[in-house]
Length: 389
Image (tube, rainbow, N blue to C red):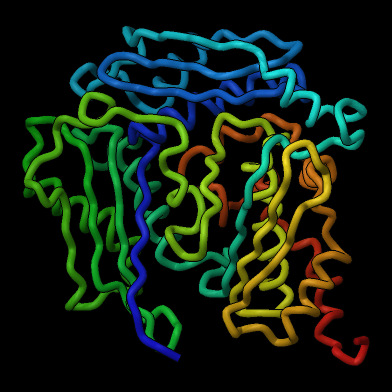
């Protein structure tokens, strides 16, 4: 047992990097809706007044990247040039070509050296779960996401006047005996119009955003920083060039646990960077949900073009109720982690990905987030009966 502090951050859907993730995933959804077998790897970059889209696509469908980009900007709320981007006038540059045939033959079933559908790339992917929250996620990242989602709600609903789409949150949680105890610091950065006073902004954000989300964990010593430079007018793509896949820790577990380095957005599920990371979360969440451990991290690795993982391992950080070797045996018995089976078992050939592109890919609710299902809990609970070993 030990005491420590964990800090996690989140960003709003109007953050420049998140604009890019949403445009890339909107293109992916558009193509998968037409052709579920589309191969997509789309990257987006935004800067003042412009969007640049590039990547590799092989599909039987057709997409209008300019229309998708304009519509995504509009939905986010970039409808005012004062916010550094206006969907009506933003310039869109596109450079898309087909997927490499050398990669394609490794992924396509019945083609290449291995006949079974293989992984779209080499690499390692991680999944994590813990019992700190009902979502089986670390508390700091869940609070950070709830803050940024609330910032978007008060902006779009006009609850706080004069807010721009760009914003960030950061939450520091003190742990006592390995359990979350209190919030020691909260940081909010929220874009606003020039005429909005900092005193108005700070008061409104404290009362209408921070206290409703974090009040149960705050005390008189909690430090709160709202626009701590004193001003946040120049934001969005004007203040910071955005790129797809640059918020991988925001997308996952807020810095708790490891990360394999692969981004998610803009990639179809044949890319194990995305699908296997979802599968690893599915495994870890069911292990914790079954009570086999209080926290669990799962690693899966692959070779390009090969279906079977090159390794599967897990770490329960000493919280496991039965030996980790027995938990790993249960994983092999209950989860098929070949790419084709991951896609089928999690039903990933659907246009569900734009919803993942802001406020985290994990700890989410709804049928679209199939990797969050606790559908293996009952099977795994049998492992608590160690007499079977």
